[in-house]
Image 1 (cartoon, rainbow, N blue to C red):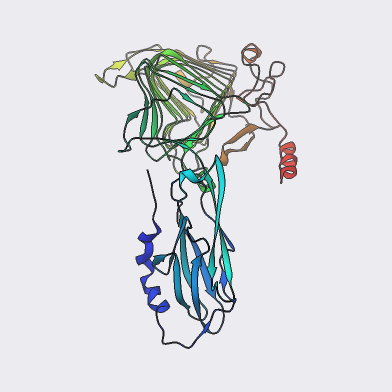
Image 2: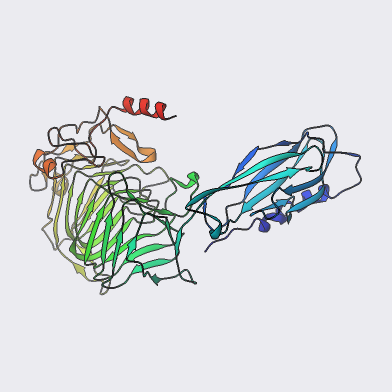
Length: 482
C-alpha cells in the first residue's frame, strides 16, 4: 500500500527555520492579526487507513512588527492529522516567529484508521494559533471512505478468492488481481473498483467475467486517486487483461484513465461489450489479437494511441462512437486501426486472416484527417471489413480507402459535421448540427433499440452511440442544478 509523509519535505525549508528560531528581534505576541491562505483546508478524499497527500497552508504576518506566536497546535489531542511548521514536525509548536511582512508554511496530512469509519464519513479538526490568547484557527476537513482492499504483501500478482464484487463499498486493488484459470468473477451494478498505479485485472484461460451494470448504476473501473484533479489524467493504472477466457459479458462499464482499457488476446469465444465507455487511455482504448467481439453502444474517447486497435479475429460493432480527440500530446495512431493478421505472442508467427470486421451506424473520428488505418500483408489478398452507414473522418484514396468500393463501404458519410458537446472532457453526445441525424441503418437500429443513455432510436435513428440532443436544454438543466 502507499503512504505519503510530509516529514520528507522538511529539509526544503530549513533556511526558513533559521529565522523562526531567532530571538534577537523586538517582537510582539500574536494578537489575532494573522492572515491565512485558506480558512478551511480540504484534504483529499481518501480510503480508510491511507494517508492524504500533503497540503500547504501559508500563514502571513502583514503587520509592521515581528510577531511571536506563543503556540500552534492541533485542537484534538488524538488528532489523525500531522503538521509540519517551517521544517519541524510535531503536533504542538511554541514561540513561532514570523517576521514583519513575511510568512511561514504549515504542511498538513492525515491518516484515518479503517475502524473509525462507516461507509463514508467526514473527519475534521482545527489548527489553533495562540489557543491561550487571541485564538485564531484554520479548519481541516477530509472525506473518508470505507473500502475492501485486495492485495498481497508484495503488491505483485495474486489470485482473488472473491467470485462476486458487490456495490456495498468500493474495492481497491494493489498489484495484478487474477481471476484464476476456469474461475469466475461477477460484478454487480453500481460497484466501483479502484486500482493503484501499475495495477490491473486479469481474466485467465477458461475463466468467466460478468460485468452487470445498468443504465442507472454503471460499474466504474478507475484509479485510487480520488481528487478531482486526477479526473482527466491518463495512465493511472494498467487496465483489464483477457486471455482466452470462456465467457465475458460486459454491460454498462466505465473504464477511466487506464494505460490500455481492454487488452484481449486469443479469445475465440464470443465477448460481448455493451453500453461501455473508455476514456483517457494512455495507449489504447481496446487492443486485441485474434479476438471475437460484438460491441453495441460503445463510446471510446481520448487515447494516446488508438481508440480501437484490432488485429485478426472477428468483430461487429453497432451504434458505437469512436472519437479520439487526444489533447495531451501527439496521438500516434488513427482512432481505429485494423489489420487482417496478427502475430502470435508465443512463436511470433504471422497468422491470417481477419475473419470479419463490421462497423454499422458508427462514428469514427478524431484530430487526424484520416482516422481509419488499414494494414494488409502482401500475401493475404482478402481483407474482410465493411463499414456501413458510418460517419467517418477519412482522406479518400485508392484500394482499401476507396469509399466507392461497395465491398468495403456502404452509405458512408465522409468528413461531416459531428457537433460533439465537448471533446476535451470526452462528452461525446451529439447536438442538433450533427450530420448523422436520422442517417443510421434502420434494421440495425431496431436490433439496438435504445441508445447508451436509454433514448429510443427505433423510428429516427442517429449514427453513433447517442441520439442527438439540444445542448441548450442541457445548459438549462445545469443552471437549475447549481
